[in-house]
Amino acid sequence: MAMKSQEEIGSLEGVPVKKLPRHVAIILDGNNRWAKRRLLPSLAGHRAGVKAVREVVEACGEVGVEVLTLFAFSSENWNRPKNEVDGLMELFLRTLRRETRKLKKNNIRLKIIGDVSRFSSVIQEHIAEAEALTADEAKVTLVIAANYGGMWDIAQSARKVAKMVEQGEISVDQVDESLIGQHLSTAGLPEPDLLIRTSGEQRISNFLLWQCAYSEFYFTKTLWPDFDRREFERALLAYVNRQRRFGKTSEQVEAEATC
Image 1 (tube, helix red, strand yellow):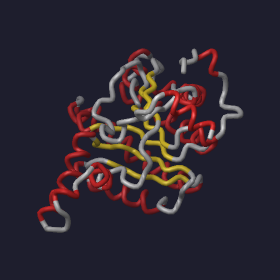
Image 2 (cartoon, one colour; image 1 turned 135 degrees about the vertical axis):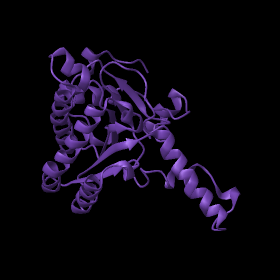
Image 3 (cartoon, helix red, strand yellow; image 1 turned 90 degrees about the vertical axis):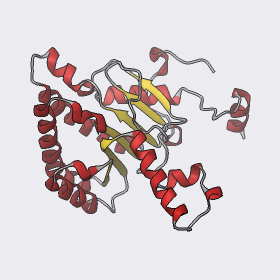
């Protein structure tokens, strides 16, 4: 099945929801570069990025994407300049305070994944409150990966499984991919169908390493603050025009589609 060019893809109009990804994961990259190009401090780029998050979340609710996972702050991001990290923590807290009730009003469930123990007690309290307040909402699940790393996620799952073995709850022979997956931070959610990275970088940077084993990747040079609904729909259309084979041949997939 030949890949179509962007000009040939068209629009989302008429595309059945079942053909769209259930779960989209995005690496929000390019905030700093966006700010530097405008001779602004780096935090201005991160603030502009919050607006892009709102637009994409809204688009997910309208087109039928069930889960949106955003890589907001990696476990490696603590290595950035202290003033930037402090500013990001302040922005995270302010956003939690300001956006939680809006999420509830719009039937969006919030879930934070990552090692939140490193955040201040105030941020941890607001995370717990936000998750509790939106727990029953189900139109879209918004997952924020904060102080998250894919290797950390696999390791913490492995520790839980090892403890089960140690306590005699299961045998070593019962440890398999399914069991590891049940203890990842994304347990209970569908695996990402589509992984998007903005700003032109073409790597996944320790994000959802286990979960993205069969994800489709979409890379764009657009910086995250400029990633609007049109850009998001372009990524969705690229996904729709790909053939997902999961180890099968094209002929098998096409035959199954006609059944």
